Length: 623
Image (cartoon, rainbow, N blue to C red; front, side, top):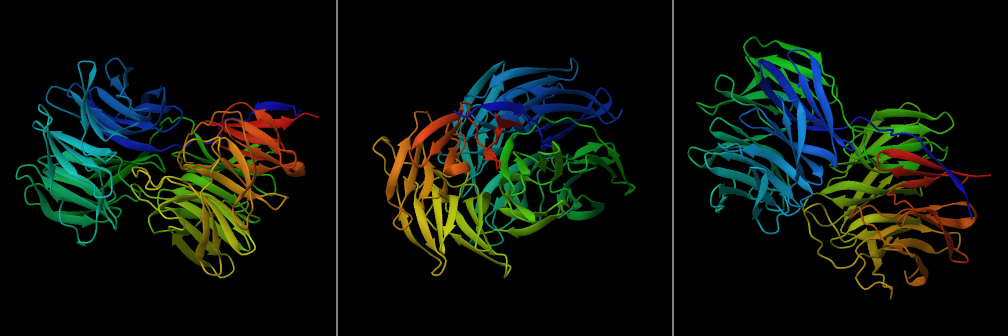
């Protein structure tokens, strides 16, 4: 039996994402309220007037937070995620109160208030609107059957206006007292064949709702007139979202393609200002006297834009965030580790010999592939593929995959090519196999290599790409197929030539996700499904042998595969509710780690690095 010494190497990724900025005057001071992602999230109350962080506090049981709102008394309501919960911060007491879980939902989006200071929250995965009043939650129920997200909403004069996130997203007007709902017809799009994916976020300002709308083809600002109950004709391409400002001298401000623009509430005219804001989006725009306030989350620089004088000043802001959950982990041929994080803005290289972490810019990383002179990162959202050069950390965008691909979980290299397996975007079905030829610099993307399924495992041999799938598509898309598959894809014909479901007598239900696949020294194609490790004949994908582990399967993701890592003497290590080592000749197993982990790698001595939420752990072999 192998003995290990366990060591915690620390929490390597610290730079999280702030998803919502709430600017508000409190006791004569201009305040910024925001929440940093992490395990757990961290709430910040920053005093802009006095240029100091007044308080920060962890929010237990959370990972990220899209939603902040203020009632008429100045109390700040915070609705974070992992479990959908509601917190309330009192600026006078400078204390946070945990108000409880939101009816068993996972995610919360937006907080609005009525005249009585009742709070309203949109949720997922059941697409509900929930009211919080007098210490209790009240359920308005699922707003639109089949739509899993109420991703945005506002309240105005007795009605809630709520938008969904789904194929063919919808907008509803809901009576606060009766719950009666009425669908609001969608605004005409530039292309009649286009389709709305999401009413992603909303800002109520004056008598208008400023809506960040995402379609299959583009991102738009659309404006709903609450007086006349109709959309205005103005539709603006290049809207960066997420939120517009409150009125300043009759004008509402927002970000269009990096330029701050204004909407005149009296004549509906949209004009450019002299100000530019190159951050990807506006997490919030504050109004303070004659100034607009915007926080750049890459530089933590507060931009103060005086709309009267056209003068902009900038100042640094100090905020706190939690340690980020590790999302991707791989090891290079030289023994360096590369680590990505959930809701992260940076990735990390770890040099074991020097016990040194080096951070560099990178978004939420789903997959990593270290190569000889560079490392490839698959980044969400948008299916972006980046390359980091060895030693320099110079970041280069190789490709945005397109074809609705969103999450590059699996990457593999062989025959001087890069193979990528992906999950599609929100409410979409049909992942893809993407192939990049390093010699010719040519990209090809093949969607639906297995119809309606996502590609989460890859291997290559003799001109054939082997793959494994998950039946799940993007978030908000219920599976259309019953069982995951393994498949053979021919490089010459560029077609799937064989696909096969797997059956095991020990499993009573169809297999919904098949993990990593990899060739062993015996020439068989090895893989995992549920708590089973199996080997297939690569010619016909028929089962040769398998073993069922006496361990309950813990599913933490519909897409992330269970990983296969080859150690010395052909031993196969698999992370099924812990880490198990399998002798593929005798089919004998040994439990190496009892603790569940989503990520692990082996070094050349079979020492193990694995993820424990935000921590990088090390199992060193004794002797």
